[in-house]
Length: 266
Image: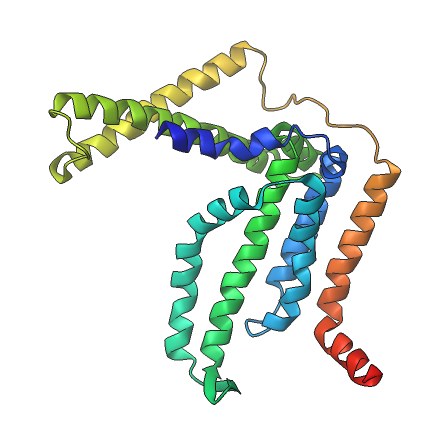
């Protein structure tokens, strides 16, 4: 469980790098990620080919920031069961024929299933890359500068920070339970209800003490540290190019365009 706690904040530790992407203004990275996600989720459930050009965003950011792909992939796998359960029903209910490959008919349900998985992959990668190249404090500061309501930003901050508190309390309780039960490998079903209840109460108490300590050190809901200064030339170039590409791929069918160009050359 301690290893899980370290993994939880491992991506944030990468945000202290010095690559081109790390040096970009956090507001630009936040806006480009938002534009990317909005354009990706706006596609039809059968538009698998239209989503392929959007691979440029995570591929480019990983290359420029030198973020290890294996670390991002492991975190994406945590979300995989949710998108699989969300899309697997389409295979059974949407059986209309879409196309055939080598005599095998592929239904629209199968196409929509892969679209859901691919769409989730792109969006999760965009969020993970944003966290891995931008310190968390700068992300929340940029959210406030962009006019996002303070209550949502505070909830986002507290949820992210208190996940670690919850894991620490769970680790302490699991250790205590193991010592009192003769080295049991897991929590017995008969004790699960009281264990979860005690975990909730201990987490509330610990979070209250953490918040009191934060207020003693000057934390206030209406006073926040200022973010970075004005946008530089590289910020404008990166933001403009990325947003224009995302919008262009949404308006123009890049696959059909390239196919027409290749047919014309041939």
